Image (cartoon, rainbow, N blue to C red; front, side, top):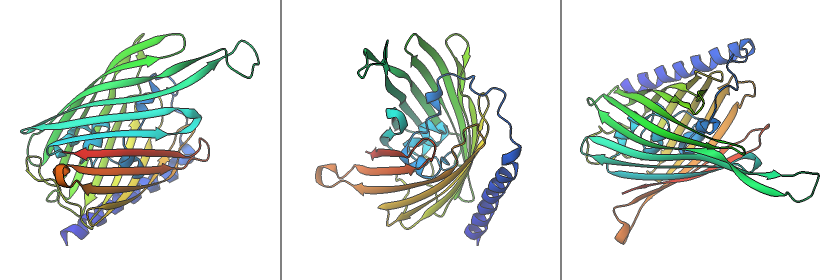
Length: 327
């Protein structure tokens, strides 16, 4: 009965978010600070699993992907986890993320990389071949720490160094993410809040600072941070909802998603996002995951491969491929 009541509460809250978003969609004006933040690559959403859930991961936050969403969720890492993602998007822009997290007794530390690069062509006239090419883009490297204050509350933070390489100049900056996650209803309900990209770029330019808040209801009981064995997901599912509130250069967006695991091996995901930006990226996202434990010499290693498909009629379809290794 408690599980059913919790599901009903979360579904009702998700529907309220979507209803409010749809009703106000025509009344939202362009944010006064639109286009004023630098290092736009920091808006990349790391991980194929969160992308398949429509960008709703702040409250779920139970694997190494959370290093890009809510650093407090790193307390869900039980030993060591490594992830990498390749994002195939429009205009031959290459987006990559790499994350690593490791437990040291109750404390969990992590390191991350997030980058976006593309080549641009230089021409002095209307020639078929360019005179030269140059790589432009930017990246951020981060160091994260997370700690469980109690069995119900965890906190975490990430310090980041930012580098942006443009055609005519480079810019550098520093930023921080801070987050908290609560585990309620006998660890079936997760509530996460995180502030991202609080900092400044060289020359005093603002970063795309944002507030994320999310809920996640799981039919499985999330294992406590200090437990020795990770949670299992056999024939279980999760319902998630997020609100993303940019504080500098954009308008809010709302995200919902569902994840269903079958026999602790295969996951199916679907998500939807509603955004109020000048160029909204509303729409459906789909994802799958495959998880398998190693054999023989790799018996203590867990492999997970995730794929997300995010169609966009304006920018084109985006594909994300990533892996997670637990060891």
